Structure formats: C-alpha cells, structure tokens
Image 1 (cartoon, helix red, strand yellow):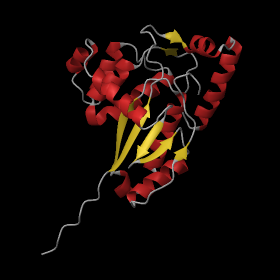
Image 2 (cartoon, one colour; image 1 turned 45 degrees about the horizontal axis):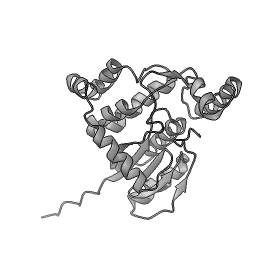
Image 3 (tube, one colour; image 1 turned 90 degrees about the vertical axis):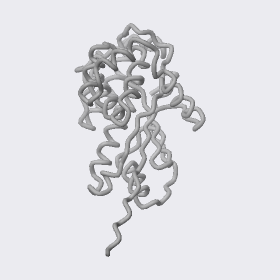
Image 4 (tube, rainbow, N blue to C red; image 1 turned 180 degrees about the vertical axis):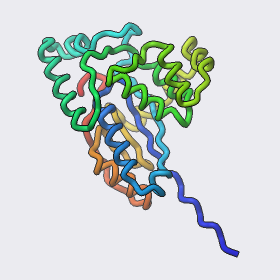
Length: 234
C-alpha cells in the first residue's frame, strides 16, 4: 500500500499596512505580482494575513483632503504637495495602479476592525478597500460602503454593522500594533514571510526571492524598501 505524500506546510505572509499609505498600496501590488508568478503548487500554499498599523491614530473621523494633510504635516505649500503627489502617482502608474490625487484622509481604525472581522478573508478585504480608496472608486470612511465591501467577501452585513456601531475588535487591532512595536516596526509596509522580515515596499524580485526561499525552507537576509512612517514621511 502506498503512503500518501506529506502535505507541504503553508507559507505564512503577514503584512502590516495602513489604508492611506501609498507605499503600502504599491508594495501590495508588487507582492501580488510575486505571488502570481509562483508555480501554482507553491502559490496555493501562500497564506496572507493583514496586520493593522495606524500611521495617524489621532486622525479625526471627518475626512480631510490629502493636500491639506500634507501641507499641515510637512509645512509645505499646496504646490509642493501637488508635486509630491504627482511623483507618487507616476510611480503608481508604472505598477499599473490608479491613483486619485483628490482622495481624503481620516481615521483608519474602522477599516482595520472590519478586516479583523473578515478573518481569513481580511487581507483580501483590506486589499479591495485600499485599491478602491486610492483609485477614487470607494469611500472607506462611509460605514455603508464598508458593509458592502465586507459582504462581497462573505461577511454578514448585520455583523459588520454591529462592529461598526461599537468598539468591538479594537483590542485585536491594538494587539497587531503591539506586536509591531515588539518587532521594532516603525513604518509600513512591513512583511514577514515565514519569519523573514521585508521592511518597506520591496521589489517584485525581492518578494519572489523571499517566497521561493520559504517554499524551500531557505533563510534569506533582511530586505528593506520604501516605507511610510507615523510622522507622515513617505
């Protein structure tokens, strides 16, 4: 009688990210491309988990134009803010990403809480919300929009409404943030691939190398790319 082959273990990918971080948006696209380029037998082992990180936890609930946020934090002129946005928009375009320069900024805690509620689909949900936010097709600060987005990945709308009407799952978000602090994470995106840290928005090749190494249980050196920090630097 033949012995069944041992099933290969999952490749765990944990991604600390925040909604309004442009490098998180770009890094997520590169990570998607890296996963998509893997052999099917390896790609199906990849298990991506969203981890919460708030770059601006003191932000209010009322959305403010991103230009105003930039000028307030950096002491820049509106023209300088527009130039910085144009630069990141050009980079996003090279990744095939839409980039709405008229987007608004507000507190991201509710987005993280809904991602926690989505469980195993949390990374997919956060990804959809962030892409909608940066492309200008989705308002993540509207609770009804969040409810609809969560429903698309199979989360009960009434359950989402309950969470958004309370402070439920805030503790889980704080747990992600405490773990980030323990790991020394000071900016996002930050990715752990089977324990191998990749700080910042790395290249597709860097993500591919870490994923391939994890598939073959080979350690890789720490990799570093561009990040956004709580001070507002990106």
